[in-house]
Image (cartoon, rainbow, N blue to C red):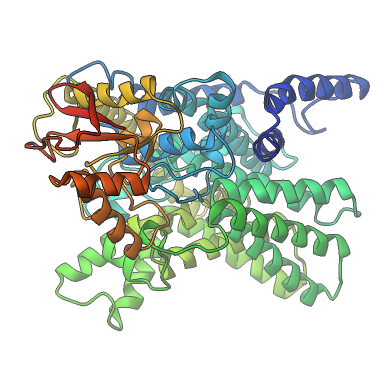
Length: 607
């Protein structure tokens, strides 16, 4: 809620041009909050049946340390050796932070003239810090990610633990497991779900600890919003509740678009189904759903996709199981057996096993819990805890989304990863009421295996840090996925010696790891607008990319008239020449002034 208020102030500052609104808002709102808190008699942050437990501190510290090992420590010495190699997603987020720190709406630093739309609230947290304190985008991201990952995720895990506990008291160990067991739940194991996937063994934990694509925040907000909506579902109408739900819907959508749309969808489903079964209409529930929907629509259109999305490149989404089966282990196995995974009956078999593999052993208690809830509903006409139905419905939606939608990079996996906390909740709810049946005993074994997997992944994070350090200390040679220290120094020279509104032309566009153009070093490190850099993550059409590629080549033309005409038309200020791409380049235009040169990069100022 606090972040959303600060984001709104930042938008207001950008749109009005009034400086220092954001700088003033923090202290003023903090003093106001402290005053209100004191006037209310300093109420406890815990509910009547809750109390402070050291469990919370232990979980927070654990997530923070492991997150730092998985992310921060890996790139701690990224610029201290001969070579730099940073995962392209992290560089993409860094460029977004730099762009968002300047103004709203933000430009896409990789594509000149393109307004940046994305579920970027995760990056906006760091962008606000950069805007206030003028720090380096990459450094604030690397150093701040662990805290942004650990705090909300800890709060979400505590919420799950409290939901499982209910009003009962359990031993300290059981309660600790209720709060932290998601980390050893064996949901979404990488080798079972991604073709060629080995380490990290847990696809879920890797996303939670790195928070690279805001999955940790998506999981947290999913639990938070459903918990609040369920608590208020039968309360009397209160405008403050409706406003709060609207703001949380905006937040959930801005952090992860899939989270927002699933929250809206399940809220309407529960509302309609409950109304049909119970034959009762609750106005406050309708208003909650309208608030959720309005928050989603406004944020989706103004932040996530814009009014006229192209649906191109990494944003392309198709209604088919082909992408999941093609990139997944199940499809790989069916193909090796000599069958077409999209042909009947293999497509049905493939989808069934895909669901089993992504949910892992939790599919057993979750299925038993769901069947039990439906039996109670049919036999007794009793709905019970509405949070259970929100959880079941959202999990089923996530599974359907994973199996029926294809997005480049297997991003449809986020439909399930987002609901991981709810999957664990349903599983544990079944185990607390089922008695010591076979599922109960089997899950204890699987949780023990999950603990070993977690330890193995932590060891892998540490080994990955060591291997990355070796990369930094080795020569980059001519590898397209490595960047030399000289190249990094050139980009930092641009950052330190050119105005913020400088536009540069670069010739490196791809790491050549696959078919995608995902080289983002120039925009991320220099924090300057590139005419064209890695474009596969941007919402830009193939036609426009082809036109920009043709123009970009003209910047490096041996014909000075052609190069000058292109740079004049696109208002290029600096030309960055990489020896890796243009080893024999010679500036033929008298308008190009040499301003920087080293072994790998030459930079010319145009006019």
